[in-house]
Length: 86
Image (spheres, rainbow, N blue to C red):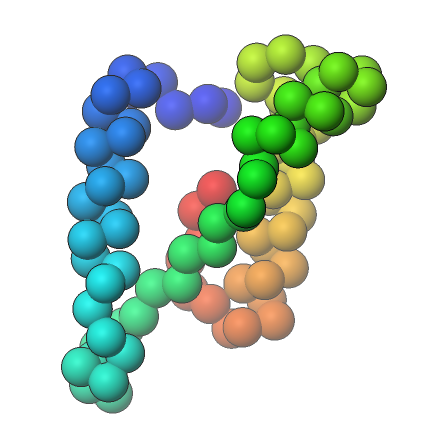
């Protein structure tokens, strides 16, 4: 399901995540966990093109959500991850 929060709140959350991501890797001790965030480049333009070509519908797409879940699951398996979020 899509996140049921306002766009402004979602943007604020993203800004806070970005701040935390700025920590340099050498400052993380071996007894701590580390997160990995993968973000696309030019994603909005790509989605616009795919929607125009009829690959995905406007708005929330259950098909695209499933693709994201499969990719996250595969990545978690390959990297022996503990938690995944999409």
